[in-house]
Image (cartoon, rainbow, N blue to C red; front, side):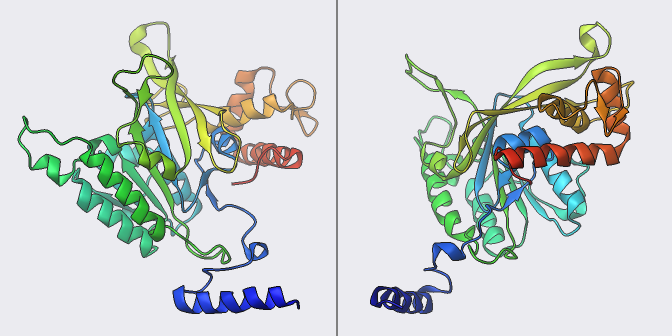
Length: 348
């Protein structure tokens, strides 16, 4: 071993002894894959490069009623279904509706709800939960609804410019230490962090995109991914306008530190019972899988799979894949394997 190698090894031993194990490590000892957690929606996972990055903050932003909370709750429910030990912390700065959470399939025995909009207590609790590896996912719903104590204690005619933004900047800096996990040990309990925000119009912007998000600019530095969701179209039964039974949610990733941005995913979400069997909180993941499979030309000829014709139209395919969970899983895996072989995506 050369003198240089011996010197850096000696430094590593000294630093790690003083500051903690694995403070200074070789790049070759680091896990190759970035830990991920699924959104529960195939096209969303693919757009993110494999799902939300764990141990990092991910932002869901959009206009009102665009599906932000629905996307977050669906992710909690799917991850709970995959892992019986999965626990989530939901900061309900806005109103928390238990039946809404249950409609998405969330096991409320494994959901801890922080029912306050007081900024300081809510953020301190998040830091403690993340630092102690007490939960697997944290959702803040939402950033604009959090109220700093300084603002709450003032009368309505008193100003308090940028109090919340300063506190959020401090929170993300402190939380960065709490959310840090071992780069070497893949068994270290990961935690996926999701912040929900809403678009606002910036004052005095004459050129470019006038939209901004509450909470200041400092927080954006700490977001590993940022996705925008919006309602693409209404889902209706019949032709009457009052027969709206759901909406198509379209997402666009406009920041991603480990995958190319500007990727798009689409899913149908239902908010009432339908004649076709959908219920409040249902996401049509089967349709999402079929559409993604079709875009990759995974079917043989016209709607054949493994030599068997499984439909004569898209609607036939949707129905078949909704009913046949084995086929649904096969298609999903084939999509992931195909993209992985091409170097365009990873499993979640």
